[in-house]
Picture (cartoon, protein in one colour):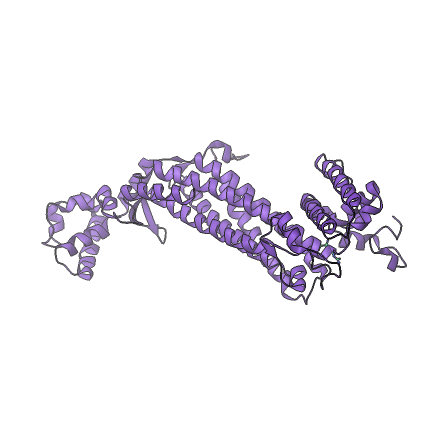
Length: 460
Ligand code: ARG
């Protein structure tokens, strides 16, 4: 390529070094912005026509040319050139080759700086919509599981020690709440993504009589960026998205960790559908929960992208700097990882087979109704701290006998407190324990069913 091939080459006396060309080019990754770039260019061209800077014929040529280019890109026939550095110059050059001078007029009153900021915002807005749809799909799967298992008893854990019985439905609803907040965070971030940088030009604005509100309306932005220097330089909206993405992955990583544990034969609480697992090349008995493990692993790269983007911004003086070109790969990878993860997860949750017998047995084995016994004694008049001590002794005795609290006889229990009566056995059962937690946010089957019904309405 000769030295005058770039959009700026007239100023230079020698061609760019080959390695420098590769080093500075973004086309290997920013070609993915093509559709948004064309959308943005068309809105800009229509505005230029609207304010009388472009003629009607020029606009028509640009529109026609862009239709062809878009078609070539979609069909995979468009030839991206490294010499043209990035997606913006590639498309502009193709347009000029097709339609001549009208193509050269497109860049009037605009810079790649406000152009790329606009493209990234359009891309991110679209990506947020896709991620939100993925979240909703996962939430629906969680609600279906919760509804089906509103009365399925499992041990609830603290410190990964059996604590109190809960229902599996209740456990699934905990994740529903996390994803609900994640969805709301994205909705909030989207508001700040959805403002228009175009019009900022390189950094100071432009001397053409542009109509930025016109462009904003064309592109579905809620408004325009108020300050041109800020508009071209900050990528805080991408960092904010990245932070929200990290929280989503953190939540899914926690659920993954649980699925992995639960699928281990030591727990044996669930089974995952075969299509989400793989075998071992050496151990024929193995069925590994690869998908949740990978989700847990991929969480690390999404966190890494957040750190990368934060570090990318922190030392930049106003306004645009080439550093910002480095925002794209982490952003694209974050979106790809999230969308894939959420899509697979929504489907994988549908295929979770719950082994309710094993869950129930584990809940029955861990003295999980000890708190219920203490509450029972409190209701009979014993101060809670004393009740706590009485039950601790009873647990020790049961442990010594190798049985559960409910397996002790009335006589055995009365050794620890004369307040214990025949009615104690109804509170020592797992069913009694979960049914007693019958308030908003509690684990009783009745509450879980009500919570599912409310949740369905909340995501409508
Ligand atoms: N490829 C660049 C980016 O991604 C586009 C803007 C370049 N502007 C400039 N003056 N070099 O940020």
